[in-house]
Every structure is written in structure tokens, then in C-alpha cells.
Image (cartoon, rainbow, N blue to C red; front, side, top):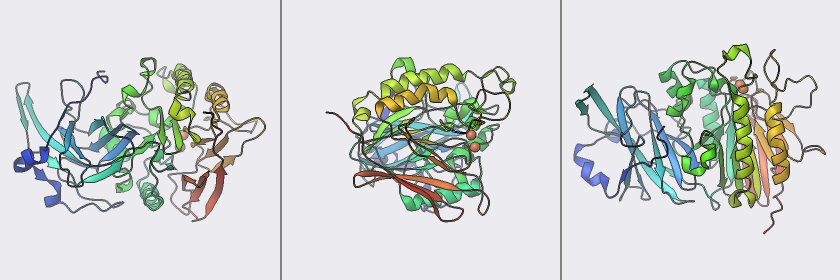
Length: 434
Ligand SMILES: [Fe+2]
Ligand SMILES: [Fe+2]
């Protein structure tokens, strides 16, 4: 509830002052090679996951197996000289969690390279007046680059992984070769979230890969990510965006994003559940209709922001398709079957896409690749990512790659099942006035 309060941090050479009392992971654990799994000293159980990237902030989350608090040391130097220490937790109390620790790094420079490591402090909480911290456990030193107008104009998209670790390993390996600036995880990470330790493994250590150690992920929720008895705990492992990014009227829109990744304005939207709110399956616990409407108001404001309005390319991401030309396709308002597309979101958001020249909308959910070229009725292209959970030779495991090459945004659909390319499309820059 106290998300608006800033995090505390210490300036200065924290390494020097803590060197005598710190047990480094590096001393007793092999260095995790990029894309490879690694052993972790207790209570750490996952590598760090870079999340909620923004020009002046970044989030770091990692899994733990016992009560602990934590911090991130951050520096512009590879040896962490003059590092700043940012602690997990908001307000007066630092975090205490037995599943995951999340740290928000704020006050950063856009388009800048940073080095970081996590620190995990096991806590023996014997009682209100007897709390025993152990020595911090430090991770390896990793790096990331904050986005901004001068950063690489590229992204990769995976979707519908449905907690399938073997396919996640394949997807992560492919992303490692593509080297995008950021990876969009376009929903349905799970089947349902029913248990917290499992949630941490699914989100933070998919396929025992280092998916987000050196490049951040952007999360757009899928319908399955709202299911299960602990689904409401998801912000413990997938941080919500920095509150300062949006006006107070939109404070509940925790996962919507709008920022510049080089020449590309990245827009994140949440289509929510794939059945109507009144569906008996939700037991009266769904209220996605007003949530989608609020996102339309946020989107209208976001598209007017100068850094978005003046971007050469605008790409929007959401889980459920926003278009289907089949007259029998369920637009999400029927009790039977699941939605093939989200008619309510389409009606709310598509006029804004048209008005502001959004070139491409990237969706998922159908587990089958599809590309809908712009038409006389729709100015924006619509692409549906394939599956993220079908091991080859079954299904259609895909990674969508977006990158600006010369004066075009190129979208390539990689089929990991066959090794072939499903499609290769290019987009001209928008006509920007001023
Ligand atoms: Fe799915
Ligand atoms: Fe879905």
C-alpha cells in the first residue's frame, strides 16, 4: 500500500565497509555462464531477474527459500567501485519475504550501462524483539543498460510458456543469440498460480535459464496469470511499474508501460481474463471491464507524451488478440468456450491506435502464429505469437524479433520447432510533425 514512498539507499563505497562481513557467492559457487543454470547458496534459489525497465529506473527480483531481506549494489564501474546500495522494501520497513525479494533502482541515467549484484540477508525472526540477521550472501556481478532514445531499438517476444521449463530453456537460448535490448513476456506464464515457491521458479528461473539477468523483461499479463489462489501475490515476483511513471488516476495500472526503447515506443496493455466478468467460473471475483476502460484513458494520455508521440515507431503489446476476421470467433463476451480475441479491448483501444499511428500490435493467446496485415479498415498490423509451451516436434514454438534496421522496423517470426522463419515484415517510420 505504501508504494509511493521512495526507497532508501546508501551512497559511498559499500563494498569496502562490508568486505569483512560479507560472504560472496563467487567464493563458493561457479560463475553462472549466460543462458546456463547455476547452483545457489541458501537461501537464494534463482538468479536475478531484471524487470520494469525505464529510462531512469530498473527492478531486480530474485527467489529465496527462507525468510530474508536484501539489497542491490549498483555502480557504473565493473568492479562496483562507488556503488550505491538500494534495499528491498518500501517505507520504514525493509522487505522480509520467504519467496522473493524485489529491489527498485531509481534515479538512474537513461541509455547508461550499470553493473550490479544482489545481496541476500537471511533473517532468523525469533520474535518481535529478537531478530537475528545473518551475513549477506552476494551474487555474481552482472550488468544492464537503461533504455532511452539512444539505446538499441530492438525487442524479442515470447508468450504462452505455461510453466513449461524445457521450452523456456529453448526460448531463452534463442533470445541469447538474438541479443534484443528487452524481452517482452506476453502473458500466460503459468497455467494457474496455486503455490508461491512454484510461482518464483516459473517467473524467475524459467527453464533454469538466465533469461533476465543481463537484459530486462517486460510483463504483459495473460488470462492464465490471473488464475489460482495465489494469483494476487504475483507482484511479489513481478514488480509493478514505478508509481512515478503515471498520474495518480492510474495508480492501479501496475503493469502498463509506455517508454522509449531507442526509436521504438513500447506500449504495454493488459487484456485481462478471457471470459466475461459475469462468468460463473470467476465466482464473482472478476472486474476486468472497468479495468480495461481505465487503461483506455491511460493509453490516450500515454500516446500524447512527447517521447511517445514523436517516436519513429510505436508498438503495442497485449496478450489476447485484438482482432479476428472470423465471424464465429468468440470476442470474449460468451459463456461458452474461451475468447479468440478481445472485442471490448479492441473497441476501447483501436481508435487510439488509429488516431496516433500505432504501426504494430503484438498479441498471443492462440498458440498459433498469425499475421494480419493492415487493411482499409485497420491501419495497424496485428501479429499473434505462436506457442511457448509445445516442445518440438509438436506445436509451433516461436520467438518474435523486432529491430530497427536502417530506416525500417523489421519483425521476424522465428519458428523454433522447424528452424524456419514464419514471416519477415517491415514497417516505415511514422510521419512525425515537429
Ligand atoms: Fe496460452
Ligand atoms: Fe491466453
